[in-house]
Image (cartoon, rainbow, N blue to C red; front, side, top):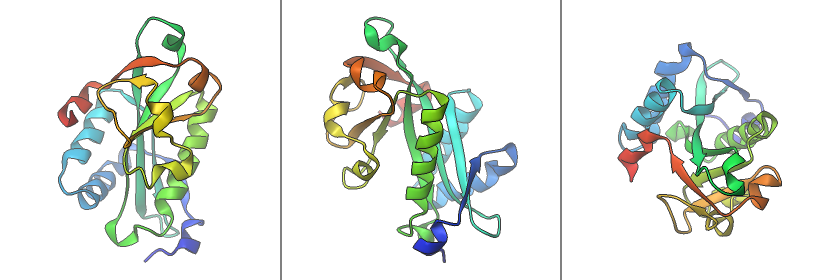
Length: 179
């Protein structure tokens, strides 16, 4: 079992085609159905993913996964030029959860997104978990889309990600299965 100390020794890297089966198995184990595994597969193969990464332990085993997909702002107003992505899903093997793997994976991937020029990241998830990374439900209230409430949060990675709000957005088509 991975401990919090070992979580800091993870290798975070982009997903390759060789990782697809391991990612599918991980997603299927981490969630109560195969819905998230199907979502990631569809997002990956329709070209909607902005970033997809895995966490590997010291033995090269995939122990965590995160995916970010493109969110499209409406073509009017100052928000039309904002680069928006959605964090969904993030997963860790059930017997390794609460050891810091997910946190390391999210922090590392958010840094990479910022370096890639993303302005705003959205997430739908536990309001007790995501604020530790800077996600904020109040900021997300400036984003009109299919989701709302305290579980819908946003994180501005640049000044434009906060300044050019409010905006209306559309999520990648595969998300319609979750609406």
